[in-house]
Length: 121
Image 1: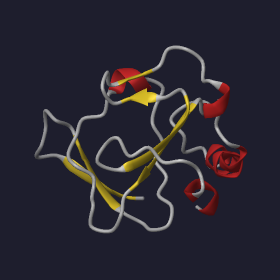
Image 2: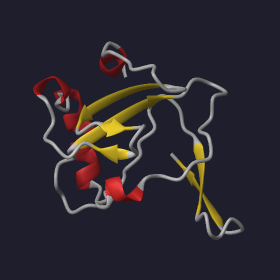
Image 3: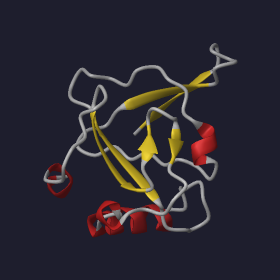
């Protein structure tokens, strides 16, 4: 967390974010098609968490290295607003990792709001 905290934060939306690799654009709801610029490459301090996730076989993709990382800072009491993820930008899967504190996340299909699953991250 200390290494993440010293990196520059983007405060252009309702929470602080950091983007590495291919950048997610909140205006277009897509990930840039071009390759990452050198100044946005995924920092090496993510190597160990990635290695551990890959070894645990919980990632939704087959052992490939991540090509995009978004760090979101949620301060106590902030919560995550209800939203629908842009699936077309992440067809190979999304992995979420909570650092610093655990959080319960309720997932539901928009077309089936009565059916939800709570996941502890």
